[in-house]
Length: 520
Image (cartoon, rainbow, N blue to C red; front, top):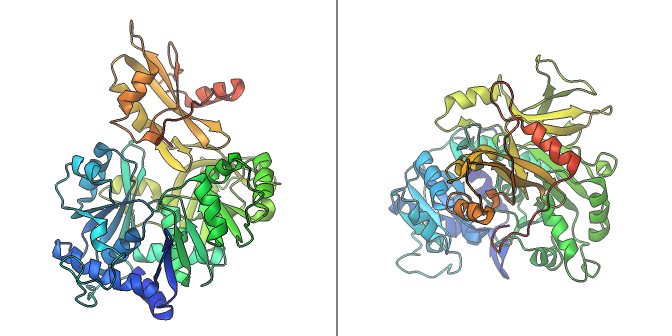
């Protein structure tokens, strides 16, 4: 087991369950054997496009079967999977393609224009070319020349680069080895008691660390079935829970709360197959927790806290703790993960104190791609410094109180305020700005920008929002703009964001306008 790669893991499940359903999507079913054959053909296709061992292949996709085939095919080539957020605009894609030096870019239908506009220079190939929909059909693009012989590869070779916002505002590439992701999957399977009977719903974007590594790959690890929704929609989500007899689902808190507003509610749905509903990316308060338990008629809610850099792996808040410790990320780390809460002086925080959360696990990344300084700052003697500050209560439960990294999490999406501020500073009439997250019951946090207009300038907020559309993904664009004569600053000139957050905490957050279509 110690030397097994992810390819060994997948092929092991194929040998055990060749005729069992691996993927279900849009009413179609593909067995483990089907997907294995398609991945061999896709590996030959990647080879014909010059993808060599160790090369990076960017995959920009919705939740489709082709993403999973591409992932396995990339590993058959000994190459590195680079999932790309399909919501990004061309400039954001260009940075990732350039930074990882992508040898090939695989895109889902409808995303070719954005990928081409990025102007990276690598070949762009439609994911349809590796298709599952025509297994057994021999043509020029989908011939079946036999199994692809994978190049020599060990568990310590890079398997995946996940891009996450960092301290500079630019995304950082978290390089994960086969060993790290394998451990992430294995530890998730243990934490949630996964079995070959598992029917795991993937409705959150599959290019996110948790849906991909903790749930999709973990399901492959145990030989379960992955049910894919191309995109999340409240009505489609609850229908899938019922009609597809889902047993396990992970999503952002908002993915559970949005269906509560559906006409007729959820009373007529049958959720009896569900044994675990897992949420992450933000806490759920006691009132909403009770409401969700009533609506879904189950108390089997789990909260997970973790970081892309750690697999993700972190802490768990178990079902029996949801009410009494609502808002907490839990008291103990997940199986196979160690945790400390570290004070400024390096000592462990005790109840009543605040410290930074440190995590250690064999699911930890190898480091940030081409950024040894950031890697050295983040990993200290094998411990990953999360940058999240937590208060330890009298019972040892952790409550996040602030983020050293100043990250905003809205609807499960990470938004780095510095990146939004940099984009705002490019707009005429903006003299100064600060971007913060304010509490939002459904979305966790909502992005708010505090703007200082230039002397004599008039800022039209809708025009500011429009100016950001070519610079930022829609979910990063502030939902509300507030104007101020000046920003509160420390004597050294740093914006006092805690003071801004406290101002909203005392007066209540501003109303959040309904986003336009496509801006969820």
